[in-house]
Length: 250
Image (cartoon, rainbow, N blue to C red; front, side, top):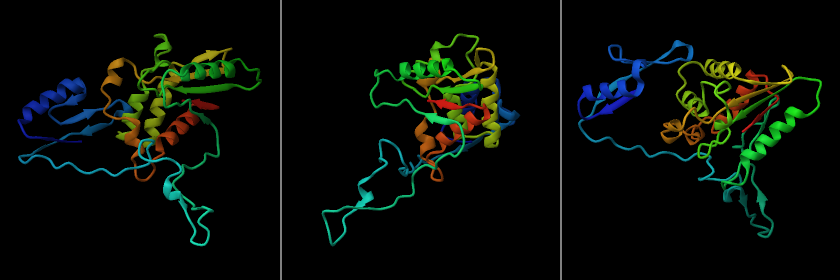
């Protein structure tokens, strides 16, 4: 990790100690991480001239583009009344295996997304079935995380969706190790219904409100990945696979 500064290096060192606490090694200039006992090297770069801001490139985001943009249709020269559909190749890939991903989404708050999600979860858990059933619930509502604060202390995991975003954006270890770490933590606090026949995993949006108020990484950062703008969905699908979930409710 590069930190560019224009004042004194000692001030930066003190700031790092305040932010990361005992996890920051001043002598070695590294940040110790919990995942796979890895660490981040920290490089301090002194700058005299003011930094030059880089101009970013837009990627598939709700606020930038839609699935069907105006460029998708071209009018043929012989018949302007009949639009010609042009094939596009930027759609996310379809998963061939479980789990299913179900998103409870709306552009407006207060329409009952959390209530609808919990209603579906309750219905799935109460449905008659001879086979075991596992569901992963991801509270990705970073404005009003209702699901997160329904959990009691015993079933509140030590990881959150915000922490997962940070770990995926700056993976401290190989991606599989990172996802396995989150899966292991969620197993420790899963809720069992009717013995082991029904199991519910909950990934809260945050462990406390401070995480949401100061988020260094948001879903838009992952959506700007040039190689795979849809990677967050892929990672949540893989997390569900590691937990053996039949469905992931987001």
